[in-house]
Length: 342
Image (tube, rainbow, N blue to C red; front, side, top):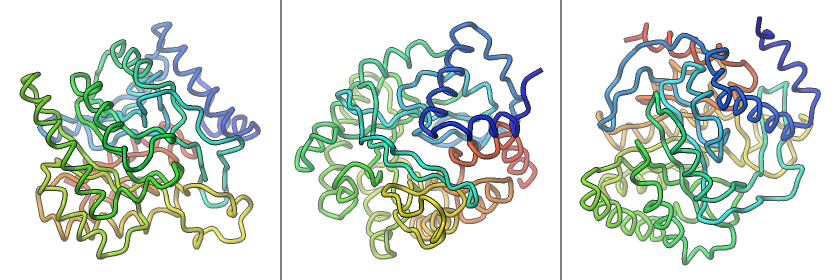
C-alpha cells in the first residue's frame, strides 16, 4: 500500500528542497522505466474540453518547471492530469544558478526558487519526449540560454521552436521567469513585438513545411502593471499567438514578510501568488474577450482556488507548488470541482 502523501511529505520536507525534488523525480522516472506507473495511477476525471484545437480530458494540467527535461512524462500523467507541460528547455544545456536555490515557506504553502532554467539541453529533452506515450496533450516550454544576449534572444527561441515543433501538442514561450537576468525585459513592448513577430513567421513556415499548425502560447509574469497587460493583450492576437499562460512566479514579498527565507532572491510561488495571478487573468480576459484561451496558474492549493481561476476567466488551470504541499489528490479534487461547476 502506498505511503499516504502527508506522511511522505513529512519525510521529504526533512530533506534539502532541491534534493527532495530530484529524489521524487528519480522515483517517478524509475516507476516509468519499469512499467510501474500504474502503481501511482489516480483515476483521471473525465471532463472533456476542446481548446487550442486539442482535446483535454480535464481542465487540470501540470505547470512547467517540475519536469524540466521531460524525464517522467508518463508517470506524471498517471497522477490524473488532463495535460502536462515540461521545460523550460534552452538550446544548450546549462547548470542554472548556484545552490542553494530552492526554499520552502511551509507556513505560507509557498516556495521561492531561483533555479535559472537549469536543464540538459534540447537534444536530451527531445529524446525523452520521443519515449513518452503521450496519453494527454503535452506542452513544451522554451526559453533562452543565460549566456545569450537579450538582443539575440530570438535566435535561441527560434532554434527551440524549430526543434520542438513536430513533437509538441502546444508550445509555450517563456519570457517571464525572474531567474534569468533581463529575461522579463522581453515582455516590454518593442522587445515583445520583435520576439513574437519573429516566432510567428517561423511557426507559420514550420506549419506549412510539416502540414501541422502547433498552437503557441506566451507565459507572462504576475508583476505587470495594468498598462503593460493591456499592451500585451493587444500584441497576442496581432501576432497569431494562440493563448496565454498567467502567471509565472512573483518577485513581490508583500504576502510573506517576516517568514523564514522570505528574503531569498527568486520567484515566489504557491498560495501567496493567488491574488496576483487572478488579477492578471481577470485583466487579460477583459482585454482579450471571450473565447481567447487563457491557462491560469499560481496559488492553487485547493479546489476552491481552481474554481476561482475559472471565475476570473481561465479556461484551464495548472498546478505545481500546490502539488508539492497537497500531493496528487489535489489534481483529482480540482478536476472534480471544475467538472461539477459546468
